[in-house]
Length: 280
Image 1 (tube, rainbow, N blue to C red):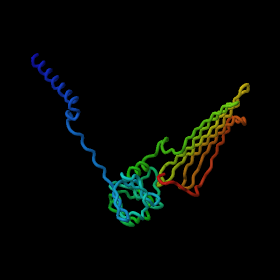
Image 2: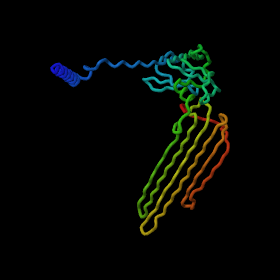
Image 3: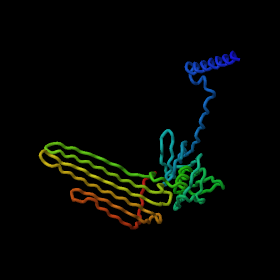
Image 4: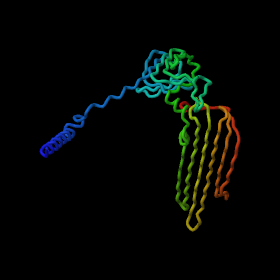
């Protein structure tokens, strides 16, 4: 019995050494049990220009009467509708007509979704209930299925959707006096939802600026300046253009002996004109 056990142990050691030797000398491909499956090749969308030129790639979105199409060779292109003869997509898109707005948390069955086929002046969306045809001039947005589902079904988190800028600067001058200055600024805004094809729900505006400076020279006390201004505004939309707002403003200015000034207010607002850049 002991002889058989020893034989099995030696046999196992021999195979272990052989597999290890093969992996080191012949490479890991020799001991691989099976080749890794190839990932499926992504399907592409096809765009045909009015002059007959053909391009393959991926439709990203449509807005402002332009189709945003990404091709591997040239990157993203924004193409006016009138330059497109044919467009076929492999993925599904939500078709949002002019004047239509979608509300967060309320999927609208009247918004058709499916694969897109554009021929001349007409767009066909292949929905689960059958194809639906719309004139291209009535289309306000084409939104890919993932983006549509994410924005309609989910409320963004507190840290999502912020846009703005953060700046900082410093200067130092030395002569008979030493002068140092430090500046900082933060301007942030957040709209919920953050896409233009949905009804606005709320908006947050946040701003902060600060300046600190000091002047010193031998045998004299140093002079310091400390100023900051902060503001916060929270808007709640009642309609696409009208909203209620709450605002808080904070100021500190050491040169004026102002320790902390606080202003709070409530009110309402109405947006008379909207202007946005593409893709925002």
